[in-house]
Length: 405
Image 1 (cartoon, rainbow, N blue to C red):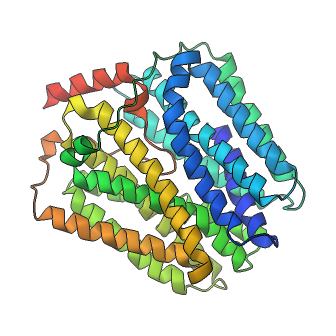
Image 2 (cartoon, rainbow, N blue to C red):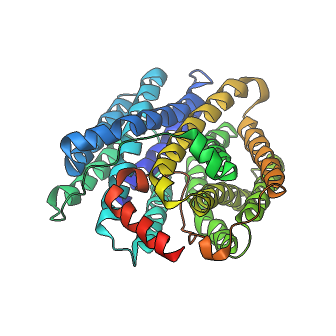
């Protein structure tokens, strides 16, 4: 998956940079971001049945083939509609890949080090995305070298799966969405995942478009996207540790305030002050990722073990719906309000969620320390599908947690 991330990082920078610089329709770059999220929603629906039909290893190869097909379509030249279709194909494959990889890793890991393994998986993937963006800054933007490199890294990713001797996991659980249950368990967590899906897609997806529209060079855009990924380490981790010690809702409200404050600075920072710009957007991205990880932890704090599978399924679908709807709205509003629309959108979503969290603080007591899950580093760019895809290991985790309670 780290090899996959290298190719994805190239494409996530190459496509908005190229579409923003070409004389095509103004909505094309934003529509490409929305198409990825919509494809991810389709992937949520089809991945489980397909894994049950052909197994993890075969479906991984098939989903990698879809990524290669998408990159091949993009390599044919700048055709905005074709590129949008290609990004939707990638989105379908992307969520399928996450579900397969998280399921397999969760199945292979023991209870003692599963959390560390998953945290390392998230960090390796996100940093791989950043390195892929950095690589794009070192190659010609003209021509089709970027999609060809993506094809190379994707083909490379198939090799360890094809040669592994690890047994494949059991079939995944049936997708079961229960919004009432998720809301009853934790309204703060449910709305938090909704907010995080939209926030992550607009900040990560529209920042390269915004930079290209402001005549930032290819190298500088690639470096900006690369450094944004380190917010996962320098912003999310300390806030996540803090959320293990105090009420997570207080940390969520504070994180939303940080997003809003950073958005104000991002609106006013000059592109001539590149180092300040990089710092601001790294904090911006890191704070957005933090909402997702803490909301997931809070959901597990509140839910009884018997609801873990349904809760994970519901949150995964909620994330995908929000990750589609919010970028779609930003794409529609950008011609009216300009290239900074995504920053305003992130500010509005963060402030609205902060108000909701503060209202809930007055209505419900905090979760006792002994009843909490431990915080794990997670990324809103990698939807959490562990409970959905690995029922056997999840049952073990439920039993352990029930004993602790």
